[in-house]
Image (cartoon, rainbow, N blue to C red):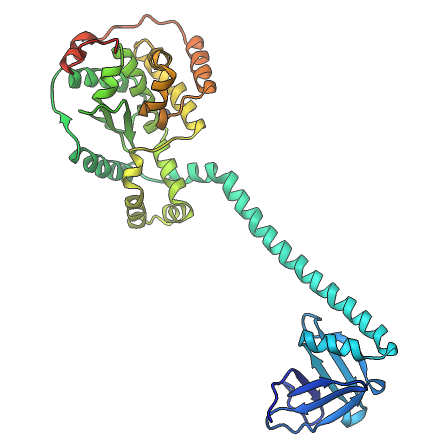
Length: 377
Ligand SMILES: [Zn+2]
């Protein structure tokens, strides 16, 4: 019979790593049977002859010692079932020792939990720091992305998108959007972008701007709007998302730490690869609340600088019924909360009064060209 070892025995003449043995508990003490080839001999140790303490690296073992001189032996018991059996069988005079040992074991385990607890705490804390500090880290990382990368990324998503859509090449709607864009971009100071605008034939009531300055206006927005100023309001807001690099910030946030590290290491290819993963998501990107407010405020100022009546967007929003608001894409990608609307109005009120200069086009002509029979609809 070759029993499974459940303890290690140490002592003179035994291997330094301990001799494996099988220990059983009896009414009088322990019986130790060597396992495998070992200089250890079978031995029965009476409870009266042994002392017990807690041991092992984790203090979760019972250390049983007996004998003196060259016959001194130390036995390490780690098997919990064996330890329990030992404590049950041991006489009262040993129990006190065992209780102390058990307390030590529990303390050691508690200490371990505390240690692991603090390790986890540090990891969790770092996580929290990253979470709450993300905006700062992201802004910092985005500031390190060259405009050329951003343009490359935006252009590839833009071309991809347009290839699946009907793009209006010319006509009153295209000229009108070009005129609005020109008026607005003329007033952008230190503009690093060459904005490109496309008008896409679609009932979608929206406009979006991709990183790098690629803007799409859907005819659905122009159909629903009652003036060029309303469209220009949305457009100015979109241009300002680009100028503030909000799309890049969202993208970096989506891609997470890998992108940040890539940017810091100047890993252009890695970033391009990562960007492909988000690709089309940029088109339906939902911005954060702070970003919306920023684009609103700078957007309204830009309209005012361009002498375009700056209340277009808020009028467009307020004219829509509650049902419309839920369906209109421009407000699902740029959620118009009550707070945001209030902020917009406050910003409008604070603007210096400037006499707006009308556009050269008649809005009715634009809508007619888009086949709108009743502009109130
Ligand atoms: Zn927005």
